[in-house]
Length: 108
Image (cartoon, helix red, strand yellow):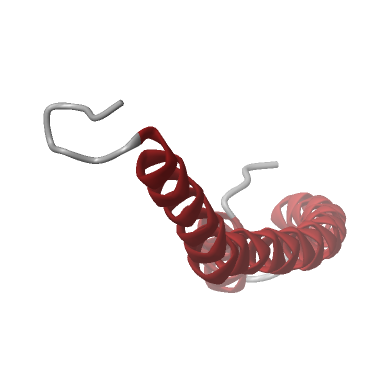
């Protein structure tokens, strides 16, 4: 039995088998390596995110240390303000604290 193109059922079956085989070969050559590469990229991104997270924790600890230090400096400034030391020294130190607070991004 022939179809409209003049191919027999056996020829169409053979052609279908060849196309299926070629499709599988192309899939294995092109798609699978791409998926493996994508998986590798995802693994690398996850590793980078882990490093960033660790750095973020470290930075948070440093910011907390700076906040404690700024609180201590503010207490000293309050003491200095209440003492008989020159006002210019107090104002200079106060400005430095304000600059540090701005750089750190916290106000204590």
